Structure formats: structure tokens, C-alpha cells
Image (cartoon, rainbow, N blue to C red; front, side, top):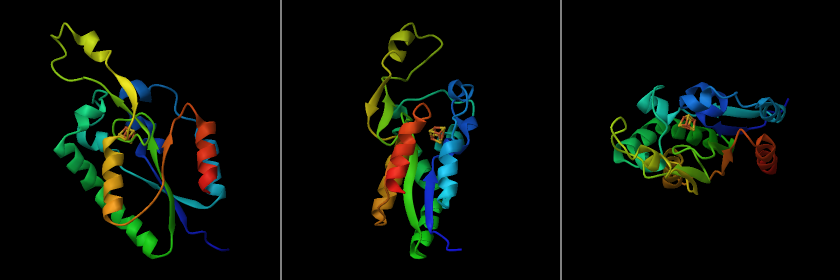
Length: 183
Ligand code: SF4
């Protein structure tokens, strides 16, 4: 049987929602069976990226906005954990494999592809009388998350061109359409 040399790179929590900030992981898990079936039926190999937030801040982290992750050290962390995946991607490409896409997570300050979350967050929480006002500044904006930005830069630095697509667990149908368009 002919081996179809195609792979897809998946954001960590696409396969493991337990890695998410608590509010999201107590929500129902995404129903990704249909997506996985399409990938398996089309013999697409799957590579799961590491979660940049859990490897930096652990499971007890608060939810963040992009501005809080825009630090040299977090960017360095993102680059460091992607390095070994970049090397694998290079090796696959060298051996005639095609990476059909890198899948990010819509709205994430780290893994968003087209949308991320932004806000004037920061400062002391317990004694801040303006906390609700600060929290209310959160909004979704059209931008990438920090991890996706760094992955994009590293791919470009190495002359690798792969499409990025966002996954939103509340729009599985929309994601399947995006996926089918690149299969
Ligand atoms: S979106 Fe990215 S950073 Fe957030 S839980 Fe998923 S893999 Fe981790």
C-alpha cells in the first residue's frame, strides 16, 4: 500500500484539553472524533506540539492576555520548545513529506492564528479596587498568539512555508471545511 507522505502539526490542547486554563478544561471536551477520522482516513500523520503555557507556568496558571506574554523570556521559551519540532519538520521535508498545516487555537494568547485575546491586564489582584474595570478590558483581536508568532518566524528563517489554521471547538464544522480545503 502506498504511504501518503503527509503530516499535520497540532497545537497541544487540540488533542489534550486538560492542558488548558481551568475555566476551559472543566468545560466539555471538544468533539474532535470527526476531525480525527478525516485525518486517519486520509493517512495524515499527526504531530502534537508542546503547550508553551503549561511548560512555563504549569496547570495553576491564570488566564492571560497576549500583552502579558509579550516578553523576551516567554518568546525565548516558545522558540526553545519549538526547536526540536522544527528539526523534525526539516527532516520530514528533506525526505519528501508534506506538512499540510500547523493548527493553532483560535483566541489563545499563545496559539491563536488569526485571533488572540488582548487587554490591559496586570498588577496586584487581591487589593485592587479597580479589578473589574481592568478585567473588562479583555477583547478578542485579529492577531496571532506569541507561540504562533515565534513558530512563524522560525519557519520563515528556515525557508519553510506551511499554512496555519485556527481551531475553534465551538465551530467543528467550520474547521472541517478549512481542513478539507487543504487535503
Ligand atoms: S492554546 Fe496553546 S498555550 Fe493554550 S492550552 Fe492550548 S496548547 Fe497550551
